[in-house]
Image 1 (cartoon, rainbow, N blue to C red):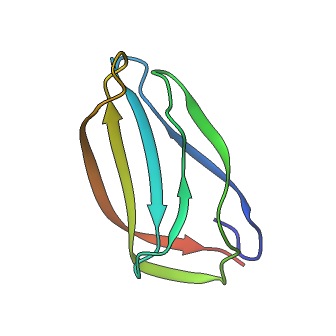
Image 2 (image 1 turned 30 degrees about the vertical axis):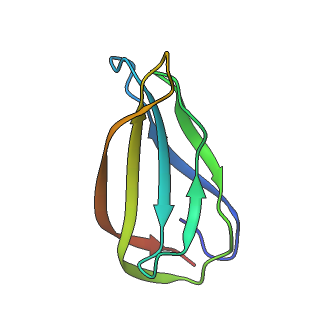
Length: 91
């Protein structure tokens, strides 16, 4: 990501072979939510997102990327995954 701006270029999405909707969330290590998508259809890819606040440059160790999957008919949560990663924010 780039420091000092809310709009960020990314490549996050729901693989086209999935048979469920997905939502994606990004949180800072302290739990502050930076972004949460709506429901993404299979094959839908996000190339740009607007985060909740501008970040300073640096490495945010222990950031959280979470995926939640939803049934396409009942919009009921099925399962999900959480990945802990180091978020690098460039000047």
